[in-house]
Length: 394
Ligand code: SF4
Picture 1 (spheres, protein in one colour):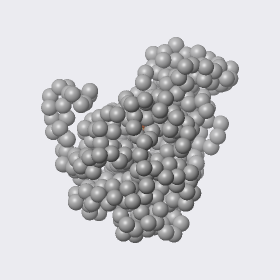
Picture 2 (cartoon, protein in one colour):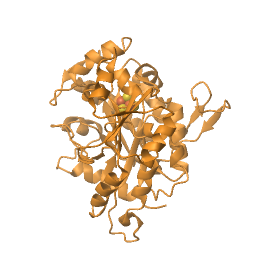
Picture 3 (cartoon, helix red, strand yellow):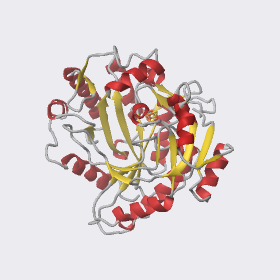
């Protein structure tokens, strides 16, 4: 979705970061004394969620820059660290939790690279692995089109002292940029020192077409992942949300085949293509740091939003039960069945790649992967190990 209105918090001093955004969006900014003007602009429109995607507010983050991911009670947590650089998204997925999460839903960019750098310097001092992501409250790479923040973060992680040290006893931290875009241009030619993992959320072409408005096609995402692999980055994939429908197993099998065997990229499915049909090669298993999987789940209040904004969507109609965290989830036997299939498809190509569940319980882990990281911190430690193995400098 195109950004149509740009508001800037008058309290923020003009800086290069803001100039860059003004120039990239080609919009005449409106300076505001307080956020009420912006909130009214969004809230008083006929469709505040759409309006919030078309309205960019440049302001300061008055809360914590770095937060521990809250996880969900009763389900295994992966000990992720969130870097809070902005909110909301210009793409439009029917199931997006952010539609119900922010009041009002609003695209915000937080100025203050120095603040981010200071917060990161603190964690880089610790001899510990932090897996840090910007893709929790926004898509990490929508910002690549209008700011140079993603590239700056990649450089920051590359230059952490422990990552440059030759000592093998050093733990280092990594940045995960999670996206459904193909906005990778600024990541090229950076000395990333392999401390950034570029991750794509994947789904079947059917789900992408019906539920993920404005996102890149599957083949375009995989082509971008291959490009990043060529540039020396490690990559990751997130099958989340897996949607259960008639024929979904075959479709997810095809997606997994495409990851490892490559995709045909033609102009009908890839707007970035020059029109020539090409074959993009598959991703090497050793380039993948992890693959997470999680079936569709939603807070009950999201259902109404989906019905209003995506009348053709059937995603919220299925065999759901209320989970221990009050979210609606597919009936457990259905989850286990699709997970078993997906895990076995991945294992055929990549027996050693770390697969983990986002928010699942012991029974699901045991019946699909054959073990359960029961102890607190055990899943996080597994992911850290994968980082230490696969993200060593090139
Ligand atoms: S890409 Fe992610 S953040 Fe953006 S609308 Fe879709 S689910 Fe939400």
